[in-house]
Image (cartoon, rainbow, N blue to C red; front, side, top):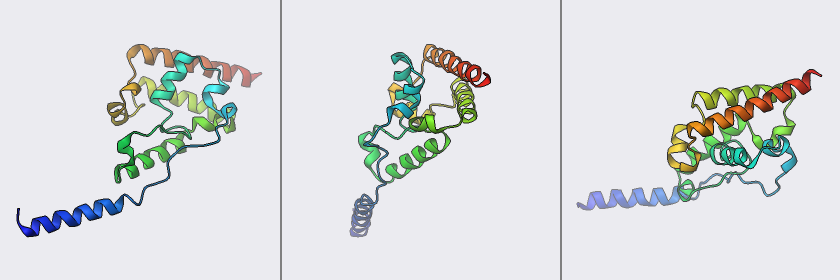
Length: 158
């Protein structure tokens, strides 16, 4: 290795280590208001809750379970961007603050995203084996979300 290559690698290492000082704040909430949460307010059974927690909640709630590699910049920046985007679209932790119409739209979107395999994102499922949904899991989720959607519509019409 030439001295020029060694110096370049050393500079790259210093830059990489320096970037580690610029991590985003973690998506964790010390105060969890269970009554506002989607799974709590819909009285989701444990089997359904587990599927949502494993496949959806890291990006669509106020509490992400981070892996060791999520701490490394620039991966940390990418993960944070995905979480912020996911929470912007739908934040399960703030379900009760949504209007009835927004809940109805969210439930329809969930059905579509599960059925078309848009969610969970492929990259996420690749890195998190617990997030991979089997065909049986998808059927269970679709049936349960559809049931919740119908209940919402019935209760709203009366």
